[in-house]
Image 1: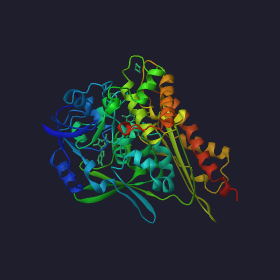
Image 2 (image 1 turned 30 degrees about the horizontal axis):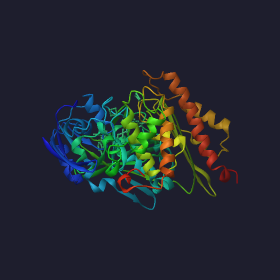
Image 3 (image 1 turned 90 degrees about the horizontal axis):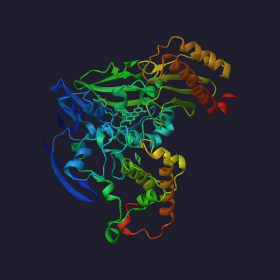
Image 4 (image 1 turned 120 degrees about the vertical axis):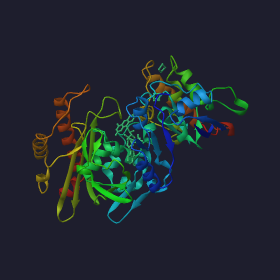
Length: 171
Length: 290
Ligand SMILES: Cc1cc2nc3c(=O)[nH]c(=O)nc-3n(C[C@@H](O)[C@H](O)[C@H](O)COP(=O)(O)OP(=O)(O)OC[C@H]3O[C@@H](n4cnc5c(N)ncnc54)[C@H](O)[C@@H]3O)c2cc1C
Ligand code: FES
Ligand code: FES
């Protein structure tokens, strides 16, 4: 058994785990955060996407012990915080508005992939959006509304001039 | 939780990593994990010890020498893709990197891991084989260097020593005038290719085309170079390119699987090789026609 300490959504989390436990299972079973979804568990679907230092990675392709000391954001850390706690984040809101989700299984991964893109590219082309989610499979929507959602979120984030400190990680 | 039980170690020097490798016949190196962890999850790989080499500073170095660019094995594919050194001096690798998996797999996957893993459709392995990159392994305290053009011998099979640790890849810097082309056909964007081709034409003012490097991937059991040397010194017109590639493809052995027949792979690889070489030529057409 190994001790693992990491930061999840801004909070330090420690746990004792076998080396064979993936970060995905650690997030769901040890940290109790069930928003990160297990789809294929071998790297092909993207449902388990999380952010490490702002970059999208697959949590099923990382062992929890490899994530020691890392700074991780899951879907639970994407909504508003501070005065906006409990509200949806801009990207989440855009997904609702454009019907970017149906069953919702792929959605956390899609939103985090979008977040990773928009944090480095505030005005992406449709092609860049499709490239950013190229590793994420959706069995319901046909992707069109997902692309619409991310483009809408980019537009809203670009027009916003109230970038509240609590949402600093969004822009 | 799907893998078998194993121990996990995080060495901080190459020596320590090699010592751990030598201490256990069933130890495996863990680099980016983007190929190994799926194999663990499917229990295709059942190691007793994983040696995580991500915390060895020497293995993430980028070194520019007068003639070469040396890339540490642990350099992440996304880092190499953005690197100015790669764009300027290994333009063929820069073109290929965008085809390797997806942004999240490139964020973790490493340049060296892809070569060590030796998937027949790996783009980085194809570029290394095409350009004859030097692959360095540390074995028993000494460096052993392999020529990438005859390093790959089968699917997931190389001539690397089983107890060695890949430390770096070294690519000759492309000349100031050089054209490159890279094409692949994959079922989904950025997925493993069904056929791929990489081409580089080196040019020197005064002497014209000095060398032509052409390789195909995903078609046989490993990436392979095509010999089109007879094109050096010719005007590289479309007909000559097509003839040379059709002739070179005659001897290539193709494999068949669930996703594509051997005949399909061969036909597509031939066409992609033609396009890659034409792209490379077009990039230097100004100099060629002087
Ligand atoms: C969805 C998906 C799509 C992908 N698409 C592509 C694609 O289109 N093209 C492509 O080429 N790859 C693709 N890959 C695989 C690619 O992402 C991997 O990064 C690469 O194959 C292996 O690199 P790694 O650093 O992840 O190595 P790991 O998975 O950590 O290791 C792979 C193997 O190499 C050995 N190894 C690694 N480093 C060393 C070393 N320094 N010395 C000795 N042995 C070593 C390991 O022991 C292991 O056996 C894809 C992966 C996924 C999950
Ligand atoms: S669950 Fe990780 S990619 Fe499918
Ligand atoms: S909404 Fe159902 S998988 Fe995407």
